[in-house]
Length: 512
Image 1 (cartoon, rainbow, N blue to C red):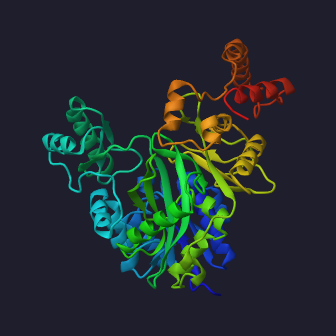
Image 2 (image 1 turned 180 degrees about the horizontal axis):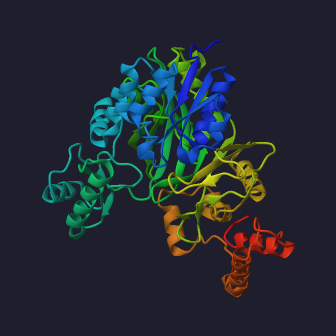
């Protein structure tokens, strides 16, 4: 066996746990799943060679229990832990625990995680490494007055950002001085509550930039390579929704320069493993370091499809001490075009509220150029305890136009019943001229949702109102029947009419 690893614990859940388990199986490595009580019947649990419960449903009592997970890995003889993304994947303390117990952490050294975990420290490191950063401070702001002085020097508009931030937490856009004091209070308060670190810094606000990131790999022999860029500008409230590779606006020269900057960024912290260096790309073509994600990204499949490189398998090889192939040293040009959409259990007609419940029907697309990275199955229970992402639908085409046509076909084949999903949003995006022509920036999706340019097509409200009395009568009938012992499980079997009524009532809260 090429890979020296024999047994790997996967410290995650859902689709990324499934993705890692598949890579382990292909390499003949024993996979170990961990699960909370809520995930006892999860797909990853069913697929793994071993599975162990690590606590109750709340992640703070299960998936975030670093010491418990490392103790379990040691007790079962695991060589390594793969953290996936989220949870403990960028927790320097967790990586350090693995290092202390001589368990390979399939990710970078704890020191690299810590260095890139602070946005202020990472900005200092990038400046020293010659990586362009957004003009602004490299020190935490001591007060609102200090923020006012810095903003006057930088020039409005400015952005206040949490040093330990992520996901839009602890961020405030300030367009004029009168807004600054309230924004400073809000940013520091939210940062302290979200990250137990109230420090914030200031930088110039870049108007309507694109979000373009570079996938890198670093081995234990000092080689770091770039696998090219991904376009991640379609975001809702700072959370990515659609990703693609390559970017519609990045040419070979810009790809080379961004790749070189990403390699310098990774080398500054002696990076090992898979990581992503994220940049803002302004309308004039200038790019600025945003942050580094010291883990595998949700959107890694689009890079895999245009490069032919299995990034999770590369992580395993790197953890086992294998060098990166010589062929990667000169960089890669993308082959074709790939697009990924994130399928969430959320209701696009109720401000994207989570939609927990049982998946009663799941039909995923197939055919040429279609990949599904899915963490659920028909009959799965979607709980309120975790991120509502169910799956990722990824397509590949000869070019962007071909890929979007394939995505349109794949979405038409996708059906989910029992819960609501964000599928209608993607269907609308494929009719949007800005998206189809690649004219995007990081605030485009929020703007279009707020002003009504994007309005997912929902059920006929009048028809729903007309059906409500009928549904109420059916439910009242079923309740009386149950009380009399004649409903399902009581005595007399349900009639076809009753079954149809219950099915129709459920479908009133689902999208096909």
